[in-house]
Image (cartoon, rainbow, N blue to C red; front, side, top):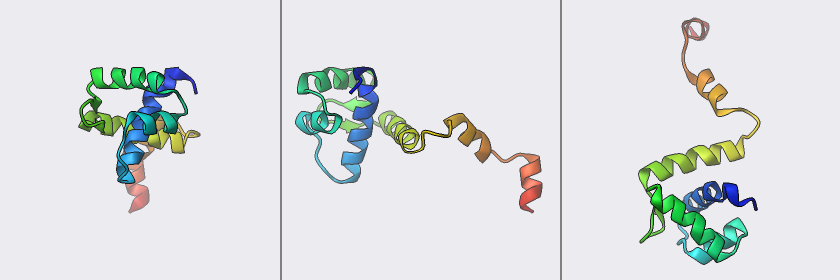
Length: 100
C-alpha cells in the first residue's frame, strides 16, 4: 500500500470497524491496511496529532468521523467527483420548477 494514503485508509478502517462493532487495535488496523504495525503506528500518530483520532481509545473524533465518511464515500464511488455530487444536490430555481 502507498503510505502516502495510509492515514486515509486508517480513518476508513476505524470507521468500518466501529460500524461492525469490532474493537480497533494496532494489529487489526495494520492487518486491515496490509502494512506493518510500525508503519500503521506512524500514520496513526499523524491522525492523533491532527485530532482526528483519540490515542487512548483508537476511536474517531467528530471531525475524524466526518472525514472518514467523506473518504469512504469517495472510495465507494470514485468515478464521480465529490464537487459534482455536491453541485447536483444543491437546489437551483430551474431544478425546483422541474420538480413541481
